[in-house]
Image (cartoon, rainbow, N blue to C red):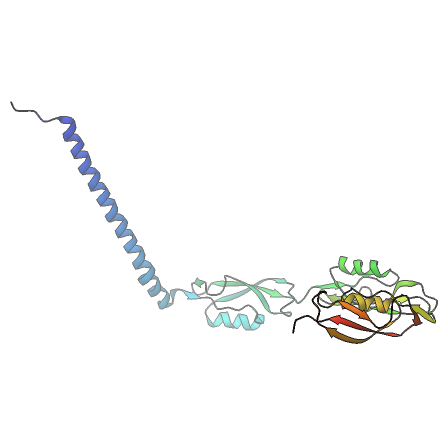
Length: 260
């Protein structure tokens, strides 16, 4: 007996054949697309660039504006100044930013926007004379400036711990990176002063303690030590609590910063 073919199985085979062809066609289409893309990137774009339709923008940051303008002009580009900006590294009149960035490919005649330095930011120095040492140092920082050296001086008929001098006068314009030094009164001079405890402090702190006591830093010696951190005072030539003439020198022994 002859069997009739099943309609369902025939339809399924045709669907499988169509699906396979569709996958094949999609694969070919994607292959052609990526081939064209590669040709465009590796052949057409380089040809386009080489024939003068596009060029790389030169770097003009850190050049004077007039020099940068001429540099861009030689590359058939147009310099446009769009603003100014404080900069601590570049002086007045130098380019601090460019847009588009260097090496960007653009067409001839493109505008390149430049921001020009107006130098480091300047700030009016605050009034420090009459303040205590602590308040003066805090005020310097609050103005965005940096505290420099603190000097101490005996002054007749002057209260101790009062700022009597400052390196930049009030309202004087100073650069933001400039350090402001102050001189602090130790009061009226006395015949003798008491030697403070200096041991265990860093040299910088010890120096301030000595000078604030009305003494002077004398000879500095160094010794390697495994028991103390580097730059630590481990001996002082005059014992703490001893009464000496003001201005007397105190020698220090400080730990060295490395091993033998």
